Image (cartoon, rainbow, N blue to C red; front, side, top):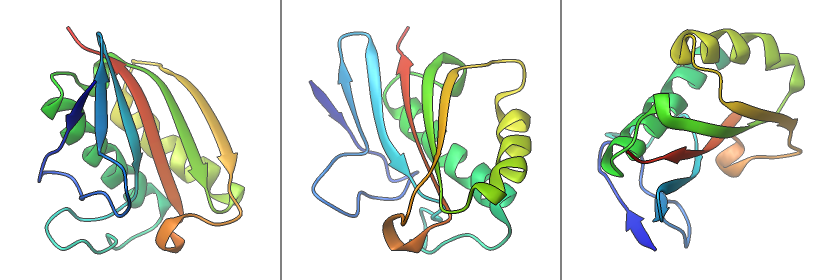
Length: 125
């Protein structure tokens, strides 16, 4: 297994890595809507926060030699399922015609009291 780290995405806030490459797959840890430069949450609604989370995932995937277009599975964690439509619209805008498998769940509480977190699994090459 090869750990992946990039300064183009927020650093891990616990004892884990941004991603691990295993074989031809990259397993990305959950990303929060944090600005990688400031470490603070981005301003805006859940749609804006979804775009930031996916930009963070894209940076991690790029560092691993992959991309959003190679994502095979995501898990979306929402603090409030009432934010589903806003998240889903932004998610569709970012992924375009690519449709990875996805689970979406409401979590009782997310790290740093975030409203959204997304993790991903992608192929390399």
